[in-house]
Amino acid sequence: MASLSREQVSALTRLTELADQRGSAVYLVGGPVRDLRLDLPPGDLDVAVEGDAIALAARLAETTGCRLVRHARFGTATVSGDGAHIDLASARSETYQTAGALPTVRPSTIDDDLHRRDFTINSMALALNGTAAGQLLDPSAGRADLDAGLIRVLHETSFQDDATRILRAARYEARFGFRLEEATRDLLVRDLPYLETISPARVHHELARTLLDPEPERALSRLANLGALRTLHPSLHFDSDLATAFQRLREIAPRAVPSAYWALLTWHAARSAAEPVIARLGLTRRQADAARALNALREHPPQSGARPSETASLFSAQPAAAVWALAAVGSGAAREQAHAYMTRYRNVRPLLRGGDLLALGVQPGKPVGDVLARLRAAKLDGEVRTRADEERLVRDGLARNDE
Ligand code: CTP
Image (cartoon, rainbow, N blue to C red; front, side, top):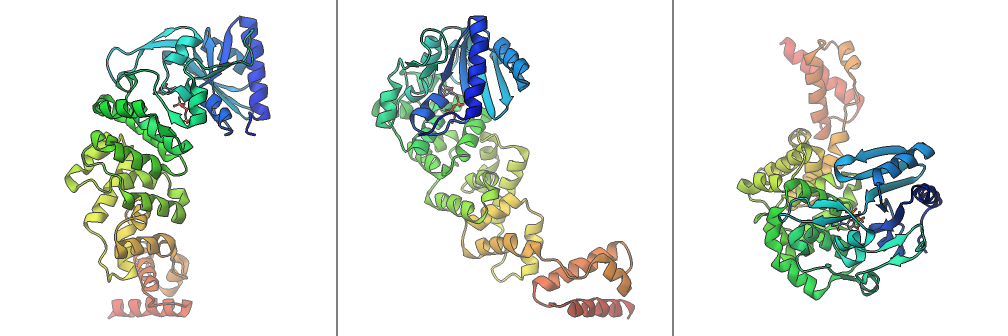
């Protein structure tokens, strides 16, 4: 049975004592309550405070020596250290002035706070103090939906208020093996156009969290089937080839995840649409560079009979995430060459070092670099194997220069 860690329990106990002193009611809320019910270990702890969350967080950080980060604009704060990470927010109600914009927020009760949330399974709270301590607050029957494996919105215009919920719904479905409740699915499809109200930064934030899940291709395939990806941008597709590429990427380069995923997401964008897709996904500069490089490699793949040294010189100038992405996707030859480069060619070095070359009579500076590059190419192409082979190649080169 999953439960809170000892460190989390002691942080929450301390928090509750401080909240009692201040007369504030505190609740564990949202994700961790859901995860505990699902028997999954909760990660970060979300706490709703009926009262001043920032002041309470500051007091907790002060008495425990933990780190405090305040987000005054949002009335939230984070306290982390000693094996626990707690996000505190003042309980609030939200009203949406315009679709997609951040809501107007007012301090309120835990009841209002639960009613402003995305899905029933995320709208439960566990009272940590007061007479209700230990009780589950579940005004929207989230527990029943958790048991039934259903993702259900709390009201008709939920996706209009905040269309990032469309992206979130697919993530929860895939992560927990749940499904969209029927009416929620209809509302989601009806409200797909509201995705246009969501800024690239918010799209990026939600997809980045999806890409951290163990099998993000599940949520992305679902978003494609629901029509959400093409609503984000008509050239954004996710098909079974990309799903296979995601799986292969994890097998061949677990450490290139998630940066190479981002590049793969732009794989189907036609050349002219690559930039708009990059912009719509809110890619960081590094992610965008990898996406552009992958696109360029797709347009101009290495020749199928290329020598290893030619392949190496093409790939060595590219971001690693782009070459890993190519090694996971695409057609035969290019994919194999990218894989060979990342797993073998890029680690090939001549046996001779700069000092050895100087001793053989190569001039210091650029000539040493040039000869090292020539040696590396010869080694990649199997022209030299031993140290003696390399020395011969250097001497031959020097002799030719003297002619
Ligand atoms: N929430 C919401 N609408 C959003 C974003 C968040 O109602 N657009 C609420 C949900 O109740 C959610 C909580 O805020 O449980 C915390 O948000 P977040 O950290 O994004 O959700 P978790 O479920 O904790 O996140 P994760 O996907 O990492 O499990």
